[in-house]
Image 1: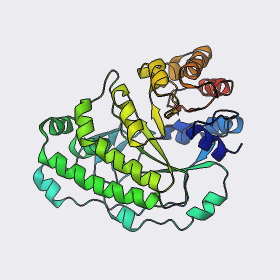
Image 2: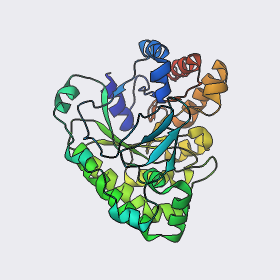
Image 3: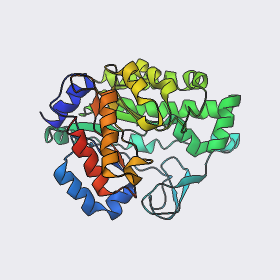
Length: 337
């Protein structure tokens, strides 16, 4: 089977000859460990690729060099500070502090107005891998970057008008972006928001369902209307909204399974969604032995795979200190499931 076929069958809950492979990594790996990365790809080519023909316009806000020590400003005007190379850092200067800031703020529409899709059809026909378009859609996280995390939690609790209006404006931007992407030659479209702490959702499930679930439903409807698969990433303990994500139309969820009761999630949602990884990147992958890594993968297989070897994508996130040997061990074990 081709990579595209492996993905499509897995997403459709159909049997596959092996699990489709994906690999995430922090920019540090490309920057400082690229030789190791290429060694990995020689052993385990991934079955998914990006959409290089999709090119966004330039934001007027972007300044500095991303993923380098120092300050840089992202596409929406948030100023980040990075203390080490190869990682994003943290927002230390959000752009929307007051109503006056919001009144004069203009979203970077240039990114969409000047976007180019000229080469996308040609790129799509050149590969037999599953083609994934990553979007900028991340309303909760973008609000954190633009308001500051502490302020945003206060905003949500008090239903601050600044939060409500900014969310509406971001949603308008994201809807337009997804409508554009859903018309392109791609197989899937992804969006994201990190919703969990180590033990629970960061806001109440009721607040999530009030403010964010309707937006997610619209995103999924747009993507599905274009005949594309919906991929969603979220970090932390998100058991409380797992069923909601499936309900609104997500096909594949990338989440930190080892933060949660993965056996419960597998029993409850197996066959209803594809588990898009992921192996434990907090403890086992960076600090465990190769056998502990293999045991973790076997646990995932037992908890999340159904009898037809489907419903799961072999995926992990390669962090700065994770040994290559552990990454290789994980994918070797994925291949045995």
